[in-house]
Length: 414
Image (tube, one colour):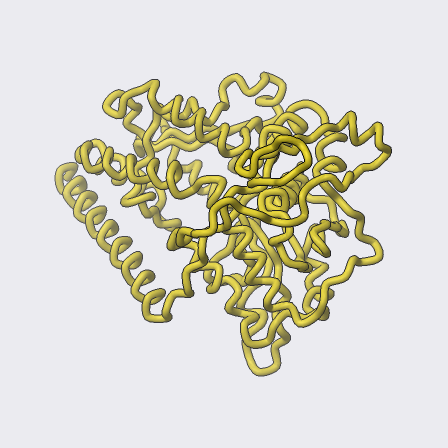
């Protein structure tokens, strides 16, 4: 990004706008207006966004014909933790219920960084956000001749059965409560941790560590752990987060888990919910008996997160998702009466400890020197079906391999 000033700054010199809490306090303003409001990139040419950006069109398909009305937003409030409105480049938030930990803080922080990366580019918009674990807007509730139109709700995850609009996870900017650093720092730590143990020397088990009590599938997964009766080639560790916090996260660093190797097919290995233990054991056995193939798959997964899942792409995904969403609004967004303006100063300066540290680490200090990537067109319906069929075929292939494995094992034990 370049700016022309009365000083000796050159056109192509990047000007930084760091966060200075002391200056903000001295000025008596929570949100000083010193940051650029016009986007002036050095480069004009754009690259095409990664192919997965096409799913933005699919996630918003529900409202393509009807558009999004204020009534939909009003009806969706009961499902949301907060409402976020952008008007004239400023962000306003109306809170409804208290979310878990500080997910909402880091989510809103991410949107504030997007506005700093592309000043003046993000359009006025009005959205609802849910920051819990479970999906909320069930597709089946809004089908049929007498059904109402579904409210748009942004969320970290979605499924075929739901209409939640998928938005980047808050942990890209850090998860302070469990000491997960902002993504760029976390990725560097993971790459460093991966080099500590060679692939051939890693533990030959599937590995998981976490709190099983937040979901039924996690509790069911714990049945696959090592026991006196059986070894499913799985090592599962219950994580008591209160104890972890007290111990200073000494044994829970994500980068230290690279001595284990979960084996996917391409970026993951399909595991059926109804037969987890058998599928997991076979997955590990296959990986241990096809080490080169397993290593190639592991490298492909690593390459994806290192080259495709970059923060630049995260921000560009956010930009295009919000931009396409704004085109569906049937009304001009205005600031709700109970909403309060937020900015980087009002968000970060009041934080303490690791929360403040992670916010400062993930701060966008300068506008981008190039435009967002170019959003590719939506998938054709037949392309989506072909993709789903391919996934189903791979799942079936792996299931058949597993059946052959277990039949042979049973014959041997008879």
